[in-house]
Length: 85
Image (cartoon, rainbow, N blue to C red; front, top):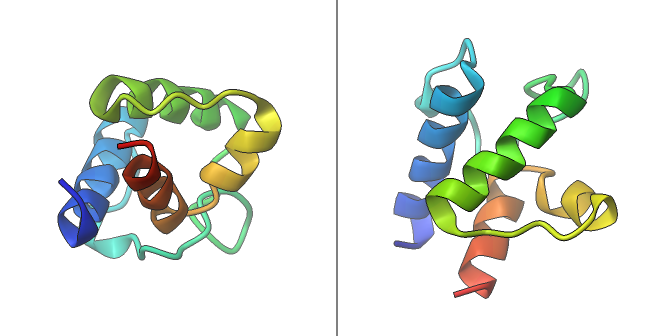
């Protein structure tokens, strides 16, 4: 799974695992995951997201510096998953 199919699956996992008040279709590939201009998730959500990405996609996020870059948007998560395959 890659490309748009992968990005859609990431959005579905985020909505399901984090119980977001968004439909997957409402989340843009480049929408910021954290902060006021995006989905507004916090550090607790970040931990849940890291666990969900490992469970669903086998993506291991090594440390908090790496996590900041990887968890920036659906696009950055998808690129990391594609790189790791």
